[in-house]
Length: 245
Length: 270
Image (cartoon, rainbow over all chains, first blue to last red; front, side):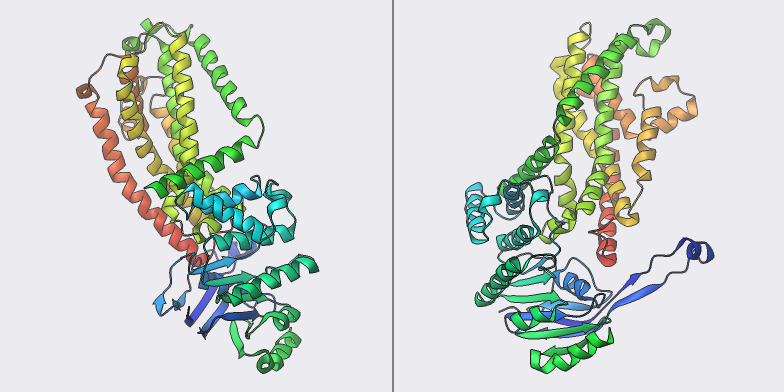
């Protein structure tokens, strides 16, 4: 059972200068605090919604948990040990328009990513057949990635994650830009992953999604944790945060 | 090992499929090679070797210059290819998605340029084969094993500059002055088109600091003159020294650049 612990995680990014600022203060750097002293401990599998307004730090937090971005301060522990990139432990599924090869077909994209982990073609072909079937991608398997609909791209992104069968899945606004039917398909997939004992952290700014999916809610605002608990426990805080915005 | 070979094969197939999706790209490049070979074939007819004694040992200017051009193709892939692949994969977001899949940055860098090197090797052979067909028997094809050794050492020495350049792209997002400066200097000072002995003495010293000079000298010796391992030893040693000094340095700088990008979050944008 995976345990995720974030201890004192903070992150700031340098703010790009305008041309005038550059000429006036060429060596002066200014920063924006994106995450400020985040402490969370997730011990049980389930669906954890990470909710917050735009710019609250959701994507940065997920990227830090995935290991693709380093925190400036603090640490991420998975099962009590410091975490490094490991797709069979944690996998981040983010904006699906990027991260695939646009001119390759859906199946060739999957084959490529499968070859990064599996060591023989028989295994690769088997897992790909399963994924195409499981995520309803068979019909479009020969279509180039750039010609796929957003919904299909999202299912492909989830399918790619399943090549690694990770214990922890991080979703970054995965239903952005998809129609209601596709949203429902994605919701049912997420619920199925929960039933398989996985831990899911699901970033969104849609309260409807939080209500439909969450076991627990992590409320983030201006880089700080504003609430963590069951939906009923944080409803007041959610309303407060979204009203503030 | 089997797993690593499968990864390498997948990267090559992936790049081949992407390249071939652009229609006549590969065909046009091959036609380009043949055109450039013929241009230099006719150009070489107006070059009188008796005016340049430095070239007499090679018997003809045509094979001399074709080897220069063929190897500069390698130089170009090795110095620009790494940075180009990094840049492309940042733009498409595939760098981050591949790293998330557990591939190490250095491994990604090498795997992603395999296709370029493979294609460049084929191009070198097309150049040399065409030059062989049209030259007046200046080639020592029975010494090809020496040429392969020199090519191998050249790739390693040239690539270190490419890895440095890729590190620069990751750190500063744009521009790639290292490869531009390095390849421009190599074209001018390493004897691609003319012998370095024509350069003023101080510049000749500078030529010796470029791996391309030694690679060209070695490749020409092995293909165009009767030679032995002992004759090639100065070039082999020079290329080995470049590789041993530049590789660890370039890998260190590249890993620092990746670390910096992981702090700045710039792996996925350019």
